[in-house]
Length: 403
Image (cartoon, rainbow, N blue to C red; front, side, top):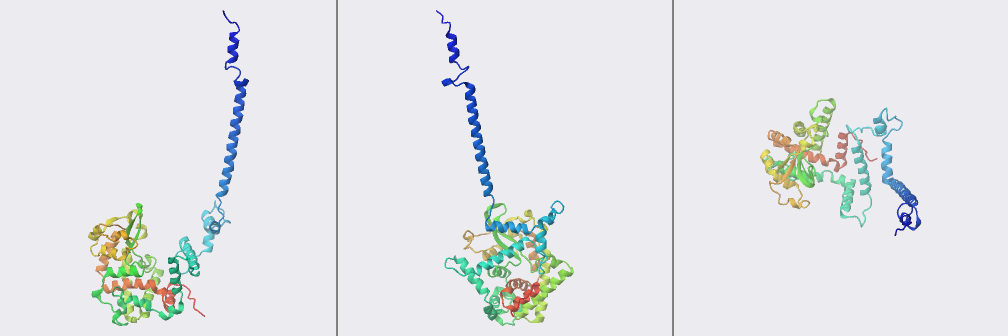
């Protein structure tokens, strides 16, 4: 027996017109769409609020940030149209407010920063010694006060320097026997390695060659010994090589300073004139073999040698002995057992070869005069006023004399 209305029952219970509980499919879709839209709007609103909050946090209003921003703005010249002259728009304020000082041939942001750091350090060092200062800071403040004790400096005069020059490795030939046998230089006792090593450790001054430790340029996680050419008495190599009016004036002023300092320490005037002239001539030859700045590229400066290989390349010098004499193994204990297998970066291989050719063709007295002169030169400003004023005269700086 057939049921005639059974088809209608199946049609009503199917998925064509209504969902559970009598909800139609279209109504369900509308509700779902509305809910999705509300969720999206909520997420968008939350994203906008978070974005605005993070944007607000990007602004730094600390004293340091404000000072940095002010410093940048002060170096600009906003009266200039940037599309017409961007250089003066960006740097016009700096050019106007920072002329090249009379005692310098150039000036830039790094000397300016150095000067400002020095002023902050001065303020720090002049502050009272506190019980909670760390030991290094306490020592720095004590050292600064000793250097600023002008009364004591005047009483001591040249004694601190002359005491150093008594050492066998640091005797200055130009002084001869004017101060007595304790200062008299003897050629047979002069050893270049010992002299440059002592100057490096006692004066923190690199003469003829420079040794330091810094990260390996090709592996910054590893520190390595580096050997390089040293600086000259004048800041520019060209001042020793060219015959421009300015270069000649600089060399004459340097020679005059060298002679005067030697005489002030006890040397004979005529002998000092002769020996210091020979010393300056040597430095001019030294300038000739220095690798010029334009050739000191990253590629040219990275030459990895073992000390054994360096010794074979430049046999006139005991490289391992020099490195051991200079490096403080309390700071680098891993170098206590250093041998000729130690890897180093030789930043100027040609310079070192040329250097020892020059040294071999120069009188030992002249070499010793130059080496010790560079040590003396580094200490002039730490002595009494008469030395300081002579240096200021050479440097072209004003001499602030007490009333």
